[in-house]
Amino acid sequence: MMTRRQALKNAALIVTASLCSVPPLKAQPSAAPAGPFKLPPLPYPFDALEPHIDAKTMEIHHDKHHAAYVTNLNKAIADVPGAGTKSIEELLKGLNSLPDKTRIAVRNQGGGHYNHSLFWQMMKKGGGGEPKGELAQAIDKSFSSFSGFKDKFTEAATKVFGSGWAWLVIDNKELRIQSTPNQDSPVSDGFKPLLGLDVWEHAYYLKYQNRRPEYIAAWFNVVNWDFVAESYQQQMKA
Ligand code: MN
Image (cartoon, rainbow, N blue to C red; front, side, top):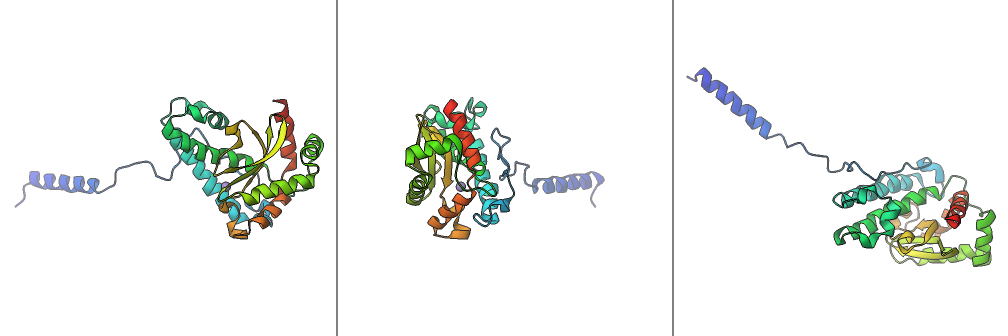
């Protein structure tokens, strides 16, 4: 017969065993570190840019792709002293001051975060048309006409091999069109980005598949020229 003492001991063993079978508590692998960088909300509903950019693409692009850049940026800088107090722009301008193992992650993930944060604001429902004011004059001066600008920008976006971006930037007070590979950002080269077009396949594949030129042409219908013109005025003063 089992004594009371043995019964208690056995019960304790069973409890211990069942506790041991519970996995240890740990942070959810999908949960973002506390910060310092956060995913900015999309400034309009997912379907705001229909039919030019479809709602499903916007949802995945913002909630999954951009969110992943933010999560991975926070992971990358978690161990770098002082990095968490800098702005994303400061980090991207100072890539060379980062430790080797962090630099590539900040260039890719931080570039992704910065570029996309701008990209959402550069589009709006009912956008398109042509810019007004000082930006319009600067575009005419640099590219002969808006149509000349559009052709050059379209060419740059079409010719990006693989994944990357086409940009209209300020380079030493002058407008310039350039492209960047991957998530490289013009700010890392000292340029001021005014308008950027994401030509990664994740930006258009659901609706346009391999037809990047159609996506580029459609995207011009959602460009937020008011935002771009305001940015031009601010940056030319800076
Ligand atoms: Mn993207």
